[in-house]
Image (cartoon, rainbow over all chains, first blue to last red; front, side, top):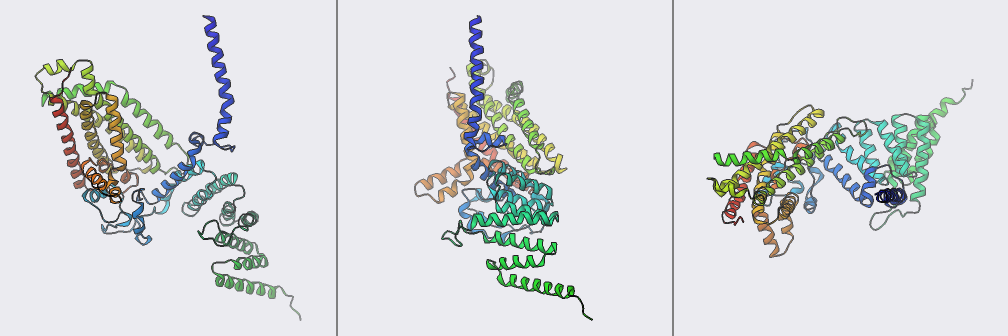
Length: 295
Length: 257
């Protein structure tokens, strides 16, 4: 009787010890040595990137209010053009578009369209908030997908005016991707445009510029597939923000230097040249005003 | 008619004595509640995500309740041998089948109504409005479950074990819900004779996806016109009648011992 109980207790103890020994190793194996605070991430293990992609797609589905092609309808998607975008706040007089759905193939197909979204719309105004849960969950599952943070930051700041929430989210992104020039740029934008904290903005934007060069200098300017090339657009945006920051701080000469750097790879060099001329004129005018008057 | 109602009354009482509905309802409430309290960027107006989760749970629960209850009816009667005293009474076999169907369908309807009331409350807690579309969604969902129950009853007479019947009906129902509406698109890219065969299947199967208005109510689209709802209801009735008739015909010739 007592022997049986003792064996039971010993077995329980060995199970507990084994579990305590295995658990951290198992978690480490699942996360490839990276710690994660997400329960969902731990549960899904290696499949989490796939689920994160699915959540990103769900965000897009919500952005289009459910009007989204299934995998079977993807082939028809080419027929759809961005020109067919409608806005729910506008009246369409019952006009129905074909979009990716195309012409109905039969009566079932025609009839089924009465029971599912059949117009291409984008979420208006603050309703964009509805996509946020999917983006947040996606970032939790795949914290190294910088684009998720960038997209969320864009909607939080530009459509919902939630600068503080965007700041926290971008900081989370930076914890997981410490040297991402995209996220550093996003952080710099928040300091520059929302907080008007020019000093911190400058530091962060300079870091973004530094890490951009570190990441992209070795990449080709063009490639056959168009992938893995230098992200000149990001560099342009970083330098543009630095120009704004220096102008706001009154360092016009420094701003001029950034503009000249910007001109080298700008998508619109003529426009940048115009800005250089304007800034040069400003500097000249300021120089004349500051000259001591002689009698 | 009284005999059918008497059988269905027994079925309803039996279903509500079992714990399936309560467990599924509590699970739905708990999971939806958990989603409701989740914090996404301090925004307390987010609702579509919660509506979607809640509706998915309602659809799963509805299917589980409908299939498990319908699949057990005839096999349980045969196993406990209560089918013999039942048929010894002045009641026809087809009346037993119709009574069983009606009982399952009404009981599932009552359960579904409670689920949809909960859904409407969750939705109203943030949107401060209840759409007429919810009533349509409930109605069509119930009609869809009618087809599934009739199909399951037919399966419970045809297949030997309730477990195999339940598994087959679950797979068929989910298959139709997920892929049924796209079979013609797949057939377009296939060669003959597979294309014709798939097209024939496409036109033969009950298109359960027609009864799913979830996308419309999640994304606040205007509800479907009532005439369309009426047409889909008729479509559902005809498939339900077909499966019930088939069940009655099979059961009429079925040896019970």
